[in-house]
Length: 231
Ligand code: ADP
Ligand code: MG
Image (tube, rainbow, N blue to C red; front, side):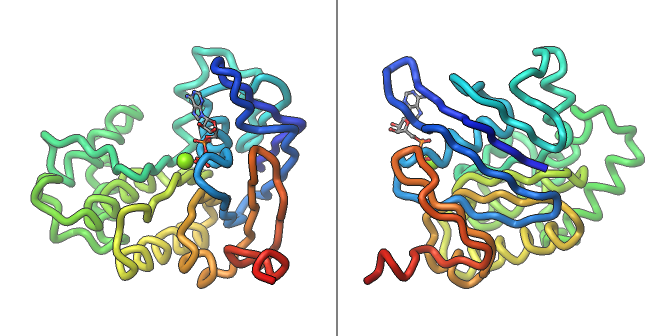
């Protein structure tokens, strides 16, 4: 499970990015984090993958108190997560297959398992035909799908995505959401920060809205905007 208890984040610049946030996400849930630019979405996600620590409060992810995690345990903890960013972060000198296989090698998997998992995940996301292509040779959408394949290859317990459809066309965005939904059906807990309104409205998942560092709405089958705000 994921739990934030009385979490506040103040950056060294004096900006308070999160204020007393309390939220729980159960194993197997699919949750969107929505809110305007600067509302604190990325900060919340960074806490989840232990990219930073809160100024105060406790963050629990997949049963681990990340705020108490010893630095030498951080890499091991991140192995249980899949992380996706808006800008893909694929390695430009490696083809699609190698990008995924390399990530699994870093995790210490044996060669046979790396081959099997790379093949399985590329088929799962429908990108087997691109395995020899370098990132610069495929579309932005295909690059993001390759990045998602890399994040899913080792079957993470938790998938964290920060604006995964940010720069992509609606069809590709839908395809990406379908892949995330499949992973969720397979048991992965999925947390997606987004301001992609169409996506959120179509998916009918839990919607947690942040405004100015505070949770202002939490709905089980929510839409991007509550009726209240539209009125
Ligand atoms: P969002 O992802 O919703 O756009 P962020 O979490 O990136 O929001 O930012 C929340 C607030 O914290 C904003 O005011 C932003 O300018 C500030 N902020 C984000 N990252 C940093 C940082 N590394 N240093 C200082 N301030 C930051
Ligand atoms: Mg952000």
